[in-house]
Every structure is written in C-alpha cells, then in structure tokens.
Image (cartoon, rainbow, N blue to C red; front, side, top):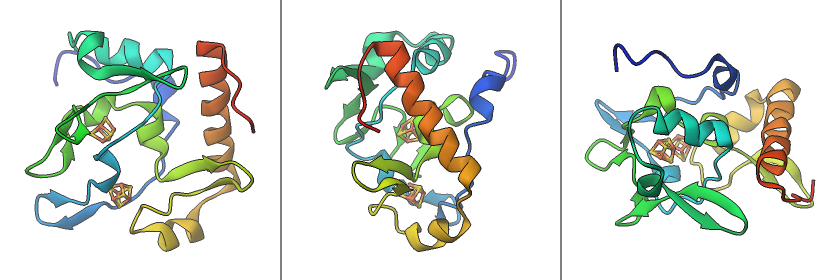
Amino acid sequence: MGGRGGPPIEADIYVVEVNCKLIKSKYCGRCCYNTEMPLAKIDIETIRSLSIPERRFVVWKGGLPRLRNIGGSCVFLDKDTNMCTIYPYRPIGCRLYPLVYVSGEGVTVDRLCPLREQVLKSITEEKKRLLISFLKRLEEDWGINIRL
Ligand code: SF4
Ligand code: SF4
C-alpha cells in the first residue's frame, strides 16, 4: 500500500482493539460474512482513492450505502485467511466493530462476535461516544434518521 498515503487521520480515531486472530495467519472474520455495514461518505471516498470504483463495493439498502457481498462475504474479504484486504483503509463501522447500536439497548457489543464477553469488559464510554458520533455522521451524510 506504500505510496498511496495512509487513511484519513479522521478515520483513525475510530478504533476498537480486538484480537481476531484464531491461529497463525487465520482470522475469525465472522463479521465480514453477509455484512450490512453502512458506509459514511468519507469511507466511500477513502476506498475510491484506491482506484476501486464505487459500484464494486457499494450497495444501497434501507436508505444507506453498505458494503457489497460477493459469494456471501464482503467484497474485500480474503476468504482463505479471513483477513481484510483493505485493512488500513477499512470503513469506520469496521473499525468500531464489534461495537453496535441496538434499538432499546443503546451501544453494546454485537452478539455475533465470539469475543463479546471480553470486549464488553473493556469497552469505554469514549468508545461508545465514537459509535454514536459515527451514527450521527451517517445521518448527516445521507439525510436519514437513525432512532438513537
Ligand atoms: S466477529 Fe469479533 S472476533 Fe470475529 S472478526 Fe469480527 S470482531 Fe473479530
Ligand atoms: S471492509 Fe474489511 S473489515 Fe470491513 S467487512 Fe469488509 S473485509 Fe471485513
């Protein structure tokens, strides 16, 4: 990825640290299968800056652009290793995962993630605020109303 520059500093603040490695060179990847990850404008711009056309990775659903699946997994997933092929440039929602917003529950850790219990113990109020700010960014970017 050398020579393309790093991801925007702005996106760099959105990070939840999770060790997703199962064994040598093999990652869990569960959250990258049948993804419905919504994308902010900055996510689309960042990935487009890699010379990847928007139509290759965006599908619209529920008023939001989302990551496209191919063969049941995110277009950017390497299924052999379950690694993200655009990891330094991955979308904000992927950086914050497994944090999710559940209506009536608020910010929590996705039940799909096998590391849920571990992450639940370590999650901070600051990280929760970052998820809320991401959702507000989606609202502003796409003119939708997410019931927070
Ligand atoms: S489901 Fe959880 S452990 Fe698995 S790749 Fe996603 S964040 Fe990591
Ligand atoms: S962009 Fe990367 S981290 Fe996000 S769902 Fe796709 S493969 Fe997973």
